[in-house]
Image 1 (tube, helix red, strand yellow):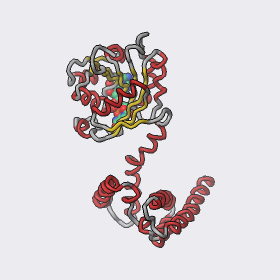
Image 2: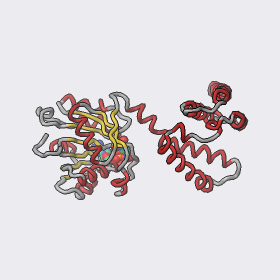
Image 3: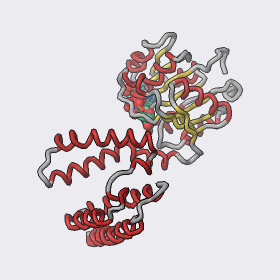
Image 4: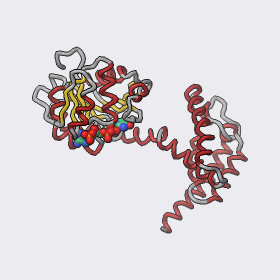
Length: 310
Ligand SMILES: NC(=O)c1ccc[n+]([C@@H]2O[C@H](COP(=O)([O-])OP(=O)(O)OC[C@H]3O[C@@H](n4cnc5c(N)ncnc54)[C@H](OP(=O)(O)O)[C@@H]3O)[C@@H](O)[C@H]2O)c1
């Protein structure tokens, strides 16, 4: 490391994520010494908000001026950027590190830097950055998923804590599955809402009215999950053991056609799994599971037959 008691931080890329992290680390007392971006003006805009921070359109400037270099560029540019950066022969001794912030891309994309002695790692804040100043407050309480070893892992953990975030450790090679799964808590939650809006649309409900009705219920469900955990927050016919309602709803959706019954069936299968994890699962849980599997057999077979006809 440098003569600074805290590592010097630098950013390549000055977009939504870099704006929040660079400003937050600086506010937390870390020296943020350099920012570079594809266009000099966006680097200058960010650097001007941070004391003693220099700006450039040359990424190498950041490698030379910082200990921990955050590569905050679009995922498709991570590998090519890593190839162009030069780390000196003392990179290992001086504690230089190159870290990317993607949840999906492998840390191995940074291998060219590792080959030149730098430590490499991943630092993925599980948060949707808007690019606005509000991010600086909202990121507190989120989790940051860290992939690194040794001293770099300790440093990245300290940096996550400095953001008032919870550090989460991920094993090497796990990022793609981790990122795919996280969609269920973000865009796929929206897709579930979209399915409800579409089905209600057949009853004449307008999308605005539907969302006004659904969003408070979703918010309440999230609060309950936070307070009671997933199995105990589960509501609806599966949680109550209402086999008749589940079977009728599956039949209705099968009649409606398309993939409505398949989607409902697959999610109901997960609901059965949650209900089974309760201290006292509903007595009818096996009957419900059987009704769900029978419907899934029909609807998934139908979908497969449709696909082979195409
Ligand atoms: N946004 C999120 O919610 C979020 C959340 C977690 C993780 N991440 C990850 O964070 C990383 C950055 O995402 P972002 O949303 O901040 O992207 P972004 O807002 O699009 O910003 C990307 C920045 O990188 C710069 N850039 C693009 N190509 C470059 C290159 N070849 N060399 C140097 N700079 C380059 C852009 O330059 P100019 O400004 O100069 O045009 C821009 O400042 C990605 O890996 C993403 O997966 C994002």
